Amino acid sequence: MEQQTNQASIYIGLNDSETGVQKFATEKYLSILKNVCRSYRVAFSVQVINGGYFHEDGRYTEENTLVLTLLNIEEKTVIEIAKDLCAFFNQESVMVTSTPSSVIFVKEKI
Image (cartoon, rainbow, N blue to C red):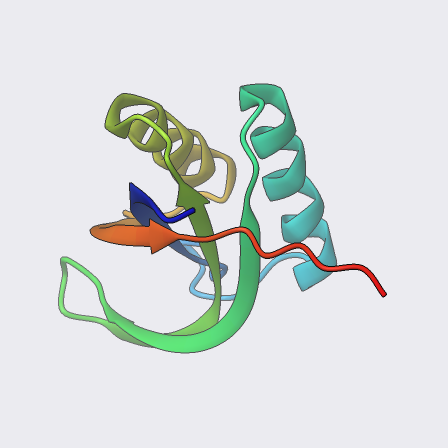
């Protein structure tokens, strides 16, 4: 049965906002992200991608980025998670996107 829901994605760069370099291994950031999601009791998926960002002062950086995807989570909770990750990863900002989505769980056994 198809469900209508919302899908939110949080994009978190891994370069430190002050030094402009990634201070820790990507796996360390993934561990922190997973602990944050566990503490909020939200199911999630995460991808590691590469992206570019223009800082408020005009500097440009390319960096590893984590994309955290959340389904059917209240906007207030998504924003709280985004704030935590922004602070924990010392980011100037993180980007949050949201879209309506359809979800179907498929089950099959042989």
